Image 1: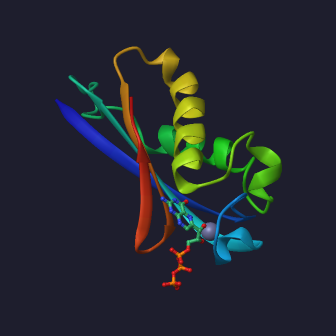
Image 2 (image 1 turned 180 degrees about the vertical axis):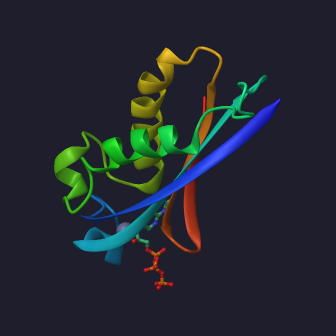
Length: 120
Ligand SMILES: Nc1nc2c(c(=O)[nH]1)N=C([C@H](O)[C@H](O)COP(=O)(O)OP(=O)(O)OP(=O)(O)O)CN2
Ligand SMILES: [Zn+2]
């Protein structure tokens, strides 16, 4: 079994609806996203899947979020948990063309200390 992970970042604003505290106010983060995938075998080059392929998919997804107000993009409160789930679902749909690759998790950091992970 092999597991690889790929990270990227994007910048976006959000506020937490119905939140009792400062995060109810409009503010921004540099969000860090890490996707982890696994599979049983490598190809002739020794790659489970090219890091660059996952990075391109992640960039495609996060470009829809970059420099946006996340409340306008997501249908749900844009918590780190909900953003991780959104990116997971989108990335899973892209990886359908690689049946041998399983998407394990997507982790989203709101700050260096705070992160949420979504997995199925
Ligand atoms: N489980 C979650 N809890 C919180 C989330 C979240 O997405 N999931 N989000 C927030 C806010 O978005 C907020 O930006 C985070 O605030 P805070 O934890 O206070 O982080 P700071 O970087 O501002 O920390 P300081 O120590 O105050 O600098 C809140 N909770
Ligand atoms: Zn926040």
